[in-house]
Image 1 (cartoon, rainbow, N blue to C red):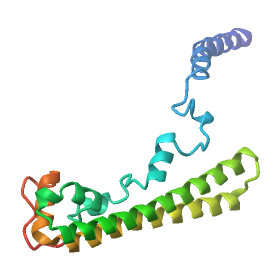
Image 2 (image 1 turned 180 degrees about the vertical axis):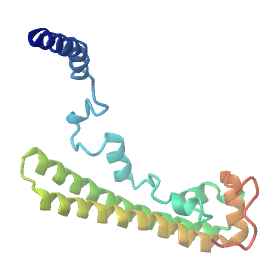
Image 3 (image 1 turned 45 degrees about the vertical axis):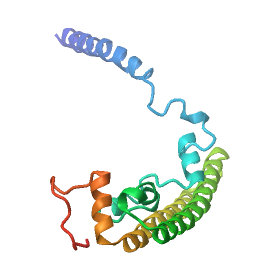
Length: 188
């Protein structure tokens, strides 16, 4: 009796293995969404991201300001005529934009350099947990400064434009709260 039961268990086990083994083999051939990225110069950054950092682009860093009624200098300049900005205000907004962009380019290049060094430390197997923490901290601090640079420019532009131009900016950019424009005089 024992040998028949043992044979039955083995047969059941063999049946399970024959069902599971093909799916395990298939899983081994599933491609990762990261496949192909191993050939990047800096593994953590795409070529598009590197280019955007080098150009000082916003990359969503100031979305918090933009969507809370703090216009960005680039878009304020693009909409200057529609906003009715005078030449003096345009010159001030342009100066804010140029200062912000120069600092954003500087910080973007610093971030790229930090990430390249981080990548090299992994590629050369010259990293340990403390090194990971320190390099991650360095990159995060640069990104924090970059975000602050963009957001601070939005603060300055809001003050330069005034309430009426901010309300027009929000309308032109399609920012309405629940279908209603932001009330005049309300400063978040």
